[in-house]
Length: 142
Image 1 (cartoon, rainbow, N blue to C red):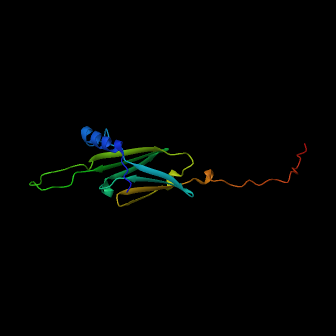
Image 2: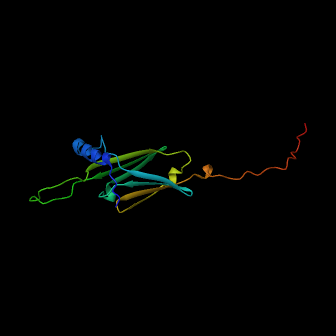
Image 3: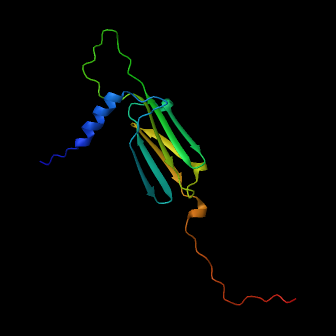
């Protein structure tokens, strides 16, 4: 059996615990994947445990901003926390979008803790064929 370890993952977890939860003025980062699928650019953000209503997506010019807030689960007064590793607070990610993307037609889906944005490639950025004239241009006489 092959075991894979990531020494930096434990350091990230410890740093998150020491720095405390993200705030609106100092949000924590959220992991993401980005890829092109045909004529669509796809960005997926991991924000498990966040209610759909606590997610805010904003585009200004070519700057995409995603913010989410995970609040602590409601516990009874008798509950004693034995272990708390799940990060809480505000999470944010900003992505500069290329001018070749159509930011007017962004679609967002949220399922199983993954926010997926689909951004179509703008028509002006798609490859197109250029017709070649036959070379006989009409002369304009004066």
